[in-house]
Length: 235
Ligand SMILES: N[C@@H](CCC(=O)N[C@@H](CS)C(=O)NCC(=O)O)C(=O)O
Image 1 (cartoon, rainbow, N blue to C red):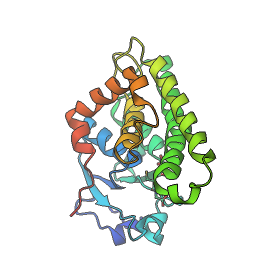
Image 2 (tube, rainbow, N blue to C red):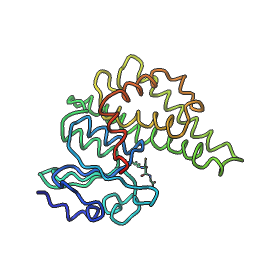
Image 3 (cartoon, rainbow, N blue to C red):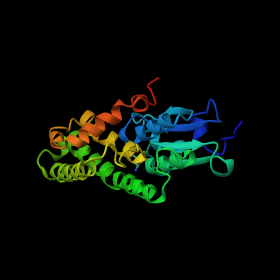
């Protein structure tokens, strides 16, 4: 049995089965990227729900695994050289899982790097911009009631990014064509999140991006996505 006692997070969220991947998360757009990938890859894992209500993501035990105090994070007891490894940042976790299994990422080197470009486009663009849009549009709307600039700024940037995706999806089923990859898994939960959690579909003019919306629907229809979107469940 794997010994995870060197990871302080396991003192607060103990592993029932330390031999399988431990996921520390919540079903948010960044969190579900990892649960969707784990489901798609058919890897066994144990999910621990990190409550934002009580700021558990800032607890010393959580921060010992992710110094940035944000979900998702994982421990894989069977990491490189068979040793346990802890990881944070959803993009790094997706790349790790794809490389560990040789799935959800093209084998061909050039196409692999192209996939990583789209993963980074999500990590550096879609996630932060959509996140800021949601913050000002929904969560801090009262704080910017007299200043339209923050919502305009992030709305316009989110729409610009949707335009980039719309162009990429011309003639392609997925961001990498026929192949469903971690680039898709990284990105469509954010487009869906802005619709579902922020109520932003109208303001972001989703109807002007039909290829993006059809791609989101294709992603959401996958059984692994339907399952992963609900993980970790409420107890
Ligand atoms: N770049 C990070 C962002 C992670 C992130 O922002 N997670 C959010 C949930 S979607 C979070 O933990 N928020 C809680 C907080 O900021 O305290 C990643 O992709 O993993």
